[in-house]
Amino acid sequence: MSTLALDRRDRGFAVFVAVVSVVALSFLFWLLVWRTATPGGADLRFLPAVNASLNATSALLLAVGYYFVRHKQIQKHQFCMVGAFASSAVFLVSYIIYHYTHGDTKFMGAGAIRGIYFFILISHIVLSVPIVPGALFSFWFAGTKRFAPHKKLNRVLLPIWLYVSVTGVVIFFLLRAFGQAAA
Image 1: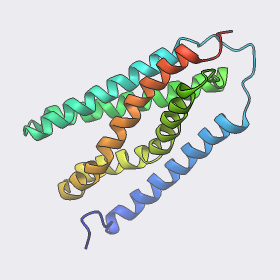
Image 2: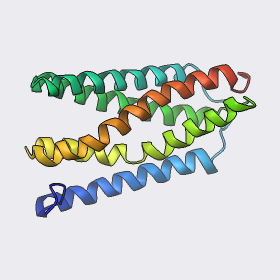
Image 3: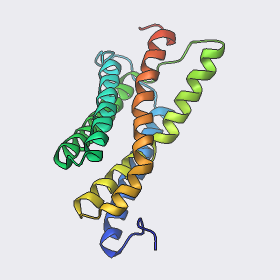
Image 4: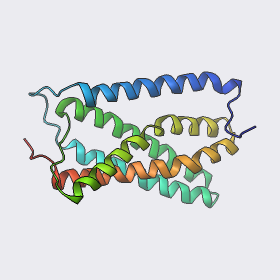
């Protein structure tokens, strides 16, 4: 039996994670694909810089937390992981608020940079999908003191979460350099 196999006590939590994940993804899809921004709202153009800072904070806390767990400093590891989760959660709320108010920023770069940008953006989006359920299960396994599945999950989740956090910052700078002119 796989160490990530769910037992009875996990099933209710798995349903909760599935519902939260589907609702969050559905809302983000609606927000980014179907909804158009309504002019006249608050000027929140400072939020992308805040969001990039939150992504950078998450990446730093994930890396430092990994260092701590490798050096058996468990309380420091826990602090960093809760901090990474919190900064990612605040990022998500801020991201939603910004896009609800302002819509998307169009990438105006041409040539090779356009292909690079869209590769980074698409991989960032695709890889961001498993982070919420993965992080919730990571906390669940740690909280229920099942460290074998926690460790196995995080061997996959950590590099994905780091990649998404770092590419979020890269996307911010690429949009600043090649995005549409600010209104």
